[in-house]
Length: 233
Length: 76
Image 1 (cartoon, each protein chain N blue to C red):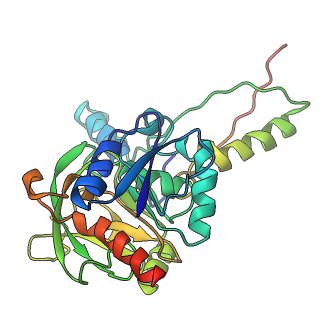
Image 2: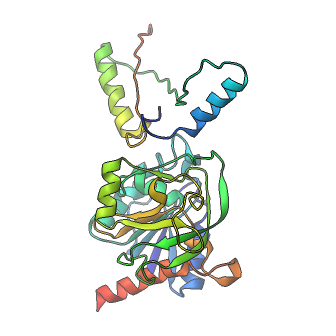
């Protein structure tokens, strides 16, 4: 199983993704430079965190025009699994592969701390190794992570079961206090209509091994492996 | 400019600071971004249309932002 990790100028969690896959999961990972036009036969595409193009204009706004994004869009449309973490999530929203947008954190501060997430859906290629309702702990690290969409879009996402992760407290309750950035309806991650494209603001790639403080994020990558194995059989 | 109904924490913070300075008449602040660009066009209408396209495709994110375009002729 081969995970392609897209590197944009300003990506900085590309190695975290690489190690999650190679050390955490024991699978093959390789980098794809954003100027490339092909995906080199990757089975899964990861868009890592960072500050692609310095977050100029808006986070992800310029990166979506990188040549490789055409290939990523075509791959996603064919049903290929694509995961965007943090800045990768912002890029997927700007590219309209995911609905909504990530606005400046409500408290205006850059946040960098652990959060608890509740797995809302286990029927995506990045959450199938979890059970619905499971509470995970992993870090987040962003200045623009407040998930925003219009009410109609939010209702549709909820109705179609496309809210994948929500910020919760340790006991799994989605309270205002547990919502770090003012995201509407405490949304931390969403999926595309076909469920094969998933984005989330917190970092499973920084929580793939207990030595990092939590191994709760490894399931995101393991899910992709199991989903591919299931699809092949 | 943040769309109506979208929380604008930057604008709120500026509003509070103005209140603390004694500008208590300030009722609300929305903070946006100004992008000034020059382009060649046959007339204002063409300049407006081209710029609106740029706003829709890149300069603004319609999910969270509104935009206004102000066209001014420059010599040359």
